[in-house]
Structures are given as structure tokens and as C-alpha cells.
Image 1 (cartoon, rainbow, N blue to C red):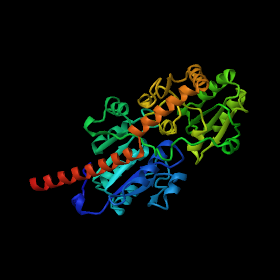
Image 2: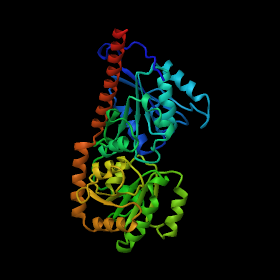
Image 3: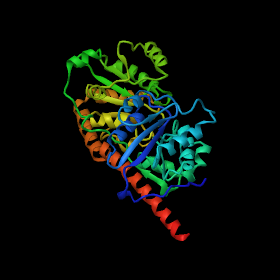
Image 4: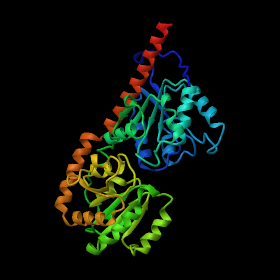
Length: 393
């Protein structure tokens, strides 16, 4: 598909680049929170971000509506024949300079076709995991030629996109997920806050922050909690997040006789305080790339015990910033949790190492700078090709 791109001005002689981020919706979740942070931090002297939600906006899009233009409900269903002209017209009307699709699926497919039809100079596909929901289907893979860059969130993830998804190596760019290390930092104990959570001062606390979806595998967390309670009877477990699995997980918690120990907190706006109130943070996912929740925990100086999936090992360095266990091995997870609950000095040492690692490799500033550099580079590259073509003609 040919991209008929309007004549492009030199980057230093025009106004800010207009960037449309395209998603399905914006529920409360790790990837969505990352996008909010990115949009809020982009330099407005150079970039004017906008957001397109193919379906309902969700709470995080509503949060952004006072800051940027937000467009939603652009498709009425999976087989809506009007979605492509709607998106194409939106991109033309808004005079968009760059489209960034976030995640795989419908937005990656329709977003890139619409961007090409609208003559958008830069088309980027940002991906956040090495499996569902970011596995790339056959139709999406066929649109590789329309895509100027694929964004990976870790070195292992970049290799996955090249070796497994077969994207051209020269179009894969690694931009690490980043967290605000000022917001996510160790906080002093707050007994009033603990009581609000249903905890007593001194209770050993294990937390997990993840949407209640199948790939996050909270069943493993609950089964490990039941084992931990045999060795540490006072241990308490906090589940932060919401989603379609909640009722099923609450039933499993009751079945495992954990009702008095497991607290389903739902979506929260005080995650740094919850992490700081925890002794250890867990992650039990089947698939991930570079999950934000463990970076946030490490920034709060908390050790992490996670399944060995995706690029997690680049952050959770086994024996240094936490421990890694195999997926679905609830026994191994429980063993490591008990070890850290019983050895506060070891937990503290790992927590400090984790925070230093995040500051060095995964700050929000690094992530924002990566996107700013990529978008500017792609625009300039497109303009250079445009000038070379004009000279050849």
C-alpha cells in the first residue's frame, strides 16, 4: 500500500509533531498506566499527543481527557466495515504525523492500515509481551511493510520480535518500560494505613499487583499462599487489581481456607503505599515481557519473587534483587516467599539492589526519551526519503 505523504517541513522549522496513540481501551493495567505516564511526560514543545480508543475509553482515558484530545468508540464490533474509513478520516482531520499502536490485535491491524491510507509519515507498533495478548497473528504480520518501527520493552523481548515474530531487525527498537522513581520509592511504615487494609502492624505481607486475567495466573499465587501459611501463620496476602477472574479467585481463596488472610483490594490509586507496606512482592504470570508491576515494587525497595517468563530475568536477578521460579510451581514460590519473610536482612538487601537497578535502567525519563528520539528520527528519515525521491524525479 502506497503512502501519499504531504510535503514535510524540517523538524526544526515546524511546530510539534502530532502523535496519535491507538489502543482498544484504557482499563487500569500495567501497559495502560505506562501509556498514561508516557503521554503526560512527552515534551509539549516537540510533541502533541492524542489518544484513539477503538472501543470504550476506560478510566485511564477519562483521566487523560482534560489534558489531550481523546477519541473513542471508533468501532461497533469485530466486523465493523466502517472502522477503517473512520480511523483514516480521523488521522487526516487531525493532521497526524505519527501513529503508535499499543499492543497487538485490532488496533495494530486497523491502525496501521488507516495510518498508511492517511499518509501518516511515521507508523510505529509498540508491543508489551511475548505471548497472548501480544502474539502477532498472520494478518498483522502481513502488514510489516507498512511499519517503520516495532518497539520492544527489553533486550530479550527485542530478540523475540526478531527471531519468533520475524520482524526485520533494523526496524526493532528497544525502549525499556519506565517507572517514576520519585513516586515509587520506599515509604515509612503507616499503622493507620495498615489497619485500613485490614492488617496489623508486624504482619508479614506478600503482595501481587496484576489485573485479574487468566495470563496473570493468580491461582498459583493463592496456592502458594496456602503453603506459606503453614510455615508463617500470620502472613497476609494483598491482591491489587481487578478483572474477569475475580469471582473465581475469591471462590478459590475460600476453598483454600484463606478468607482471613487474602485481601482483594481491587484497583487502587495508592499502589506505592501498598508496596511499601509489603515485605515481598510476587508475580505469577504465564507470559510477560518486562512487567511494570515488578519495576514499581523494586523502585519501592521490595524484593520480588516471579515466574521465569519473558524478560523478567533482566530485572529480577535471581539471588540479587529477588528470586525466579518456574511457571505453575506454587511450591517453589512458597519456599522463596517463606525464605524472605523469615530473613528480613536478606529481603532488605535485595530490595535496595532492586531500586538501584530500576534507577539505572528503567526510569520513566529513559522511556520517554526513547520514544521522543524514535519519533523524531522516523519523521526526519521520512522527510529525507521524500527529498531524495523529489530529486530523482
